[in-house]
Image (cartoon, rainbow, N blue to C red; front, side):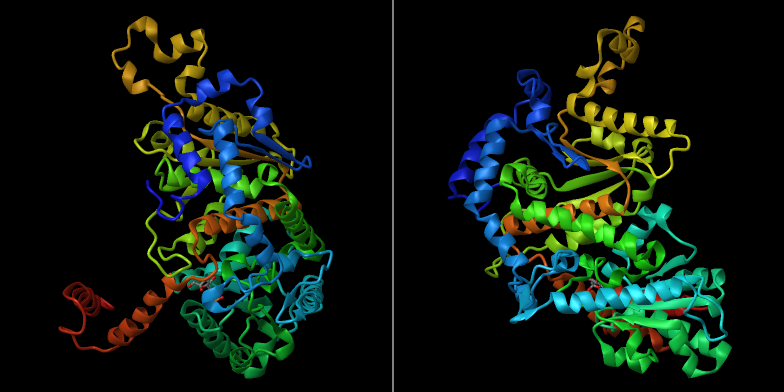
Amino acid sequence: MKSMIYKNYKYYKKLLNNFKYMKNVHMKDLFLNSKNRFKKFSINFKDYLLLDYSKNIVDNNTMYNLFKFAEEINIYDEILKMFSGEKINETENNSVLHIALRNLRNIPIFVDKKNVMHEINLCLKKMKKFSNNVINGAWRGCTNKKIKNIINIGIGGSELGPKMVNYALKDYKNHLNIYYLSNVDNNNLIDILNNIDIESSLFLIVSKTFSTSETIVNSNSIKKYFLKKFNNKDFIANHFCAISNNTNASIKFGIRKENIFKIFDWIGGRYSVWSSVGLSVMLSIGYKNFKKFLAGANKMDVHFCNKSYNKNIPIILALLSFWYIFFFNTSTEAVLTYNNRLSKFYNYLQQLNMESNGKNIDKNGKRVSYNTCPIIWGGTGTNCQHSFFQLLHQGTRLIPCDFIAFVNNFSNLFYNHNLHLLSNFFAQTQALSFGDSVLSKNLKNDFFNIRKKDNYLFHKKFFGNIPSNSILFKKLDPYSLGLLLSLYEHKTFVQGVIFNIFSFDQWGVELGKTLSNNIYNMLKKNNDINYKYDSSTNGLINFYKKWKYK
Ligand code: F6P
């Protein structure tokens, strides 16, 4: 694909030339020609994490030109702007400072001449006190019962990050049961209410704006349900807290001021798990583990800021993504996690990446002439191997993949399962890269059943040459999870810089919200509508009315 934006850039042109050659190269030859390819194209990050990017369709020249290209477009300048609190979220006139939330060394960061570290530390202290009180039973419900259930009411970034992290760190959790209520679908609400005893439940209303329709509808329904049972408005304060920027609306709901946790202006929803939005995580794993989670993220932040382009893990991943999107014309990326605890990771990543970079207008307000954000999808290995991996191996599209795994689980019980799990991981990346060429003679005979003169040989052919990154951690714990999330946040950031778009707004979600409010008013009325909207929308609304309660 031709990119108007970079066509005159020296290293973009060099990449274009390199691509003309690389598009006909097979990875197996790249490995044959370079015995130390793994060593050259892998990074051991302090014995916590290994990135192996050798199974990509790149040679020395490609990587050299990619790094030079990164230099040419000044990625470091952009990083510096973010880390120093510049208002890089231009369309909302905001800084972007999720990195400040895990700035555990307290390096001052200024927004409008105010050091934000002061209020961050106060908020963390407040979260610590609050979570300790709930965990140790000092916090009581209106009938003096200890809290057993935490219900996080929030959607988008106010749910996906905390829910994914809590699931991933299940082995570190205490006695509290954590639920997530996001969808406005009453099934979601009913299922949770059927599971909990409201007297020992604490509801966290998580909404930066305190106006997101799903969250407010759910919260109001629970409040109604609660008041029906207790008929005393004063009791609300024992069972509801708010994580929000909208203090007035929270107080109006019945929440005490001291139980409102601030979400700072300069944090976007999808980057907010490190903030008070992560309260459900802190409640579940405790303050100490939460700090380790922050520390892991901070370690990656420091790496991202300081390492040269050719040693910088998030930058390398973003450059490879750019290489495939701009030159090989790929449109999707698969993320395959070889650990059940990470089964919610790709949902989280979908919001992180696609809400950030799914844009078609560049920073100059012009419609872009190139593809931006890839479609992120994926799932859990090995389950996916028995569903969509067929398409990865033998489909018609080139789909770059990230494989993620942990060598050690929390428990060593049935450790042999890990051998199975990881041998599948390694085998899949091998098969994707080298196809059936990797089979030794004997295996080949077996595989193709050659002695029986197989008539369907071609259907069993694996051409390979499908790129993958392998991200291998030593262990799944709060620290390494912090590393992983921060790594993908920064990859997303660099992709946005390359696409020349604003990554930190999300105007694309607004139109649907406005229209649904309008249609909601139509659904409430009994009469049929004929001319209000287009014939399809009118037709759907009328069928809704006809079938309602039947
Ligand atoms: O609709 C998109 C969005 O604004 C997300 O970016 C955000 O994470 C989510 O809604 C929830 O927003 P809030 O925290 O204001 O309820």
